Image 1: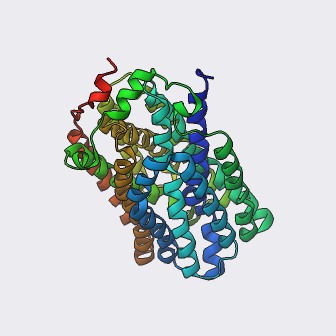
Image 2: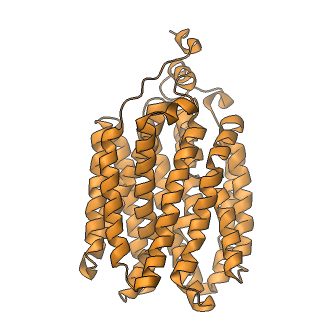
Image 3: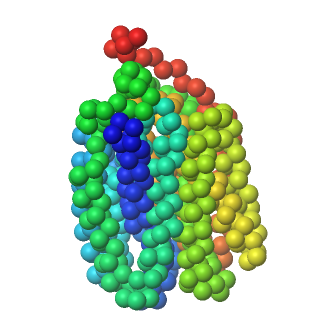
Length: 408
């Protein structure tokens, strides 16, 4: 059990991210055309729902981070799965924009309770060595959600219609509630086990690290926050509008859905591969390379050339997968676990703001201009900003507490 259970926790974190991210963000764009046709909303009004999701996520992330630090990931996730089930019940009975925004406020809560921060903190407690690989495995879940949930949604819309298709997805959070209760444990000591890397190292890691106030005073923290905001603006803007953009280019719904799946399958590969490389190569160089690849995809997308769409999707996905992993790994490695919930929660405020704005403003600009040309060029500018911030990430001097020193 000592050998396998930590890796089971990494896999469980991945499953949690697959369902939470897939059902709150990446699996929803395939329903857009049905909603626009039935209600006659414009794209800006529809996509403001995602801004609501991320505004709620950003507003409550630091506070939920405190709850995660105090009560553990498991309890918070269980509450989140219940909220997600209820939200999808109401989604299938949607009648107005106000109702849509209310549902997405619930999804914003779910995204914090069951999403990225919770998954990364869970894995980080179970791993000292091989943490990059373990986080990479966990973050594969977000890509699986983006690859699988759109396919499932498109299939069910064709068979049942969009309302019943949404109701059919309620089974996923119910399954995750059961798995969370019976399988997930917050820390190795809850099972009488040791983290990968040894109990002494883990104990030192637990008490070492910067406190929240000290972390906020470092350039590394703000560099990571700006990188998160910039890259989330672009990647969520792309994934949220890719389906509609390809429908504008006269691709069929199934082909447009396949492009979304390809994007997230490439991100899956990027997360695992670059997470593994981060355990063996200079992390800053890996980080820069990820953003560079992502930038190449953004440039291809901004050409507005139909024949380059598949190159853009592949490159963007690969680069983003690495960036996603390196953001979380850099934060944990830089500041430790002492105040991980609050630190990652605050960074989430920035990436949630960026992601929400990216989805919403891209829709607003399309409504205003009738084209994605301007928002796609803005994506390039934000990726350049993220590249510049890489140079500001520097090693943070962490002083271990006396209790950790006594272990030597």
